Image (cartoon, rainbow, N blue to C red; front, side):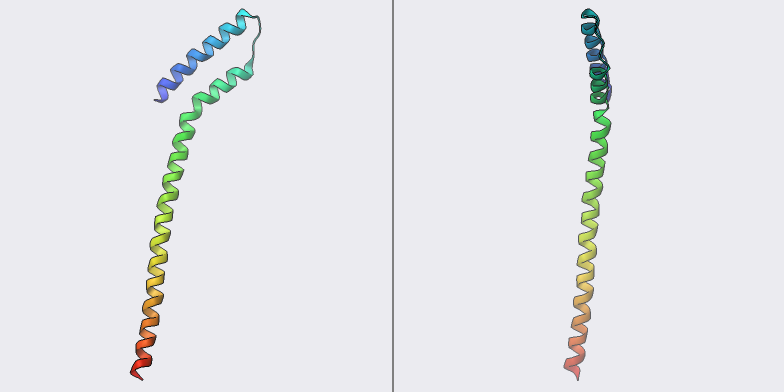
Length: 86
């Protein structure tokens, strides 16, 4: 996928260069945009990884909160049991 985008990007760069050469104008801005477009898969991959990490951390947080809640509930239950014994 990345290689395909690079190949397509190179073809686009070449086409843009040819068009500007034909009109005797060069524009580095368009070339920079195409190069940024070529880098997009790397950024998308990084975003996907960050989203996966976020989901994983959210699941861990839920588990920790549930464990803490259970711990607090068991503490309260033992206090109630102690009160009933007296």
